[in-house]
Image 1 (cartoon, rainbow, N blue to C red):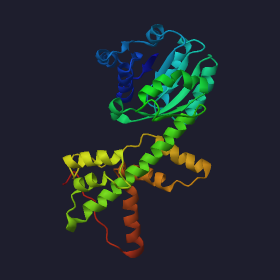
Image 2 (image 1 turned 135 degrees about the vertical axis):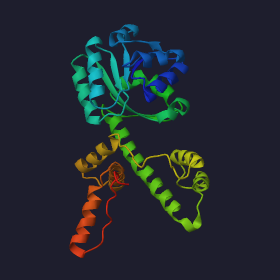
Image 3 (image 1 turned 45 degrees about the vertical axis):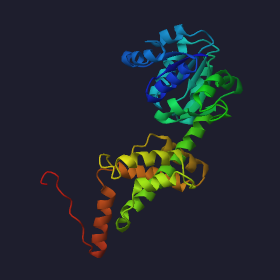
Image 4 (image 1 turned 90 degrees about the vertical axis):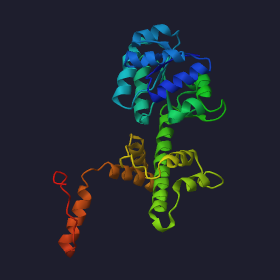
Length: 307
């Protein structure tokens, strides 16, 4: 197929490379010329403006966006929309809130442009191993991009699914990432318990390696854990700060809207919030409250300027 990938970051760039390797003609565009030039040796056709992207594609066109969620994606899509023709197809493959995807589709109908939303999982390993893909859109739109989905996936018949109408792809990816939050939190808590049992001197890397084979908690995430623990079991160079990129928040909101209990996913999200709190006001507040009602001792804060 011929298509454009707009946004050549870590995910978009590697997806473009995987598609070129499998015989597709990929026009690549990103916000900086240097980023586009970086992918020319991998076989992409460079484009340095939205107009160039459109000119290099034969109609009906497929333009696949891989920009961050929210304003960057919306701005990019509707910068391209007036340049495209009725019958062209826009695909939003980045992490986006599913209600935004539904809204984009409604606006694009005014131009006669089709729309599909595809949740993509696989991270930096997708180039080699393939991506998990969750597609939303009408059957005709998904049929048009099926050759792309089959070649991005780990195998033509595995790892991709047409979930339902527009919005369903990003909805499934949102839930996927919420589950991911909870699984990661469980692994982190378990290895913390192993580490703290000092009298056993547990070799964390050895346990992780053993768990990879035959246990009910084996997974690709555990494969990654075993790998990095082999290098540094103390993780001494890693700051205790865990970012949240949005999907966990959306999942927690959805659970509230649906009245569906999702305590593990929500708690995992809140643990990430905890890691981001540099002031610790809640805990200072609790310590002072204990002192106020029970006369309990408190630890004095260390003044960084004096220490």
